[in-house]
View 1: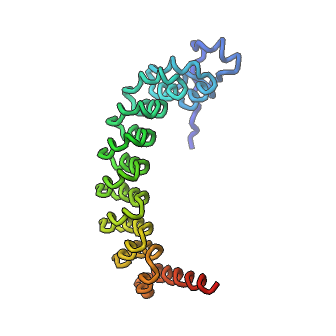
View 2: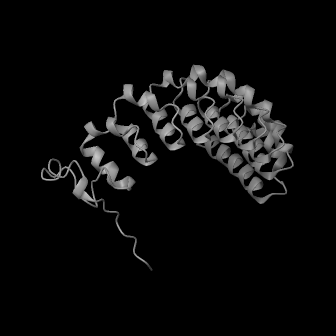
View 3: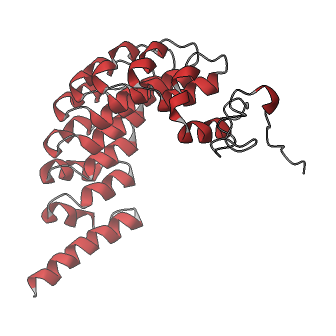
Length: 248
C-alpha cells in the first residue's frame, strides 16, 4: 500500500518564515497557510485567526472556505455569492439567521439544508416548496406544528415520515390513508386511541403493531389471533400488563 505524502509548502518564499515560524505559530507539514492542505490551513488559522480575512479572496477554494470560519462576520458577507458551494456553506454557518434569506434559492442543496437548519422558524414556510426532498425534510423537522399539514401530501415519503413524527396526535388521522406503510406505522404509533383503533385493520403488520400500543384495550382484543406473530405478542403484552395492574 502506497503511503500518502504530507504536503509541504516551500518556506523559502513564505512571508511568515521569519516571524511566525520562530515563534512556533506555524510548522511545515503541520500548521501552514500556504500549503494546499485543508488540515494544515485549518490548524494555522485556528492558531492565527488574524490572517483569515486576508484569505477570503484567495484563489484556492478550500483556503477561502476555512478562512470564513475565522474571519469577522462583516467581512464574510462578501462571499455570499462565491462560485464554490463549500465556501457558501461556510458563509451560511457564520451569518446571523435573519440574514439567510438570500440563500433560499442557492443552487446547492447542502447550502439550502444549512439554511433550513438555521433560518428563523417564522421564515421556514418559504422553503416548503423546495425542489429537493432533503431540504423539505429539514424544514419538516423545524417548522411550527401549525404549518406541518402543508407537507402531509408531500411527494417524498421521507418528508411525510418526518411529518408523522411531529404532527400533534389529534391531526395524525390525516396520514391514515398514506400510500406508504412506514408513514402509516409512525402515525398509528402516535395517534389518539380511537384513531389508532381504526388502523388495526391495516393490511401492513407494521401499522397494526404501532396501532396496538395506542388503541383502546377493547379494540385490540379482536386481534389476539392476528396473522402476524409480533402483533399477536404485542396484543397479549398489553392485555397482560393491564391484568397485572388490576391485581396489584
